[in-house]
Amino acid sequence: MKKQKHYVKFASLFALLFAMGCTETPKDTTPWVALFNGKDLEGWSQKGGTATYSIRDGAIVGTTVDNTPNSFMTSDKMYGDFILELEYLVDATMNSGIQIRSNSFPYYQDGRVHGYQIEIDPSDRAWSAGIYEEGARGWLYPLENNTAAQKAFKQNEWNHYRIEAFGDTLKTWINGTPAAHLIDEQTARGFIGLQVHSIYGDQKAGTEIQWKNIRIITDSVAKYVKKTSVPPLVTKNKLTKKEREEGWEMLWDGATSDGWRGARLERFPEEGWVIRDGVLSVLATGGEESTAGGDIVTVKRYADFELKVDFKLTETANSGIKYYVDTELNKGPGSSIGLEYQILDDARHPDAKLGSHAGSRTLASLYDLIEADAAKPAKPIGEWNTAHIVSKANHVEHWLNGVKVLEYERKSDAFRKLVAESKYKVWPNFGEGEDGQILLQDHGDLVHFKNIKIKSIAKE
Image: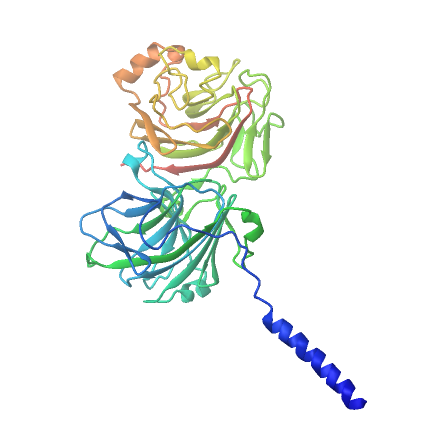
């Protein structure tokens, strides 16, 4: 009887183990989609230079050629939030990268490909899987402080990348090792691209980089994003590596009113302006000039300079960025006096059709004096735009979203003629000061600002 019990137990155990052995491994239900079919370049198009792309053994092969700029094989589809995985094998003498959320516009540097790039760097620096911005800000997340990621790259072998883009967060892994973790609001959508870098110096034509097993998740991305041990680097109201090297400084720290005061006050206004979540906002108070908190100006004065300001309009809003401001000029009603980079909802605000010179009160114009290029690349209301003003040796340029939209010469006869025909004719030597303050205008409409930075230019 005892033996029979042991037999029954053994049989039951054997049946359980047999059943477990026969159970199929659960299928991977992750919604991966192949971006490359392994046979041809269907769904891809080349931009930039003339490096060659071909197919070999189920991989895309990019080959360097002489006398060409950077080349990119780009996805025909545009992607916002996604998870991308791929493998690559790169020649040890090459530099390359994976473009994500990138774009090519005719108005931007003649169609130059620009946007986030996940670096492929087989050099001794070993910054592979760091984040660079091609055609714009340069290095956003270098790997100088991530030794583990530097060591994870495998020279002359296939390497694996995982790239996550979700909202304002970009994360990368190289061969399973966390590499970069960037919080940046610059670009929300664009194509994916495989770069063959231009060659120079001792680099030779005919060197190769290969990519294979390219797949993407775009469905329920939040469900599949991973945590990373790499601390985030936040770019909002911070300088990039390139900007620090070029001598830029933050004009607003993103959190306090330090360095700013009311144009007619010794302190920052107690109402009318709000600082919240790294954004400086002038509040809506009925659309009149300087009737609430009033304009704000920098404590410091600037002569030759470059200024960059990100701004976001609301519907029907009006504001401005003024420079070479003298707060002593106008003690009466209205705004302080200075040259103005106009900020306006052109489609809805009546000021767009007014002015001493046609079109001179539209977005990015030199207010009441010179109209910005009508083909300017303005982003829709509710999206961030970047104003860029350059003033050097009396030559001034207005830029919008990376495109120059007007230029002029301060103190020239042509400039003085425009002033004489404008509302500014009542102010002697208008716009001709050797230096002045930077001003953000309170025009009674809700407008947001961030990433306010300046570079002083030494006189030659």
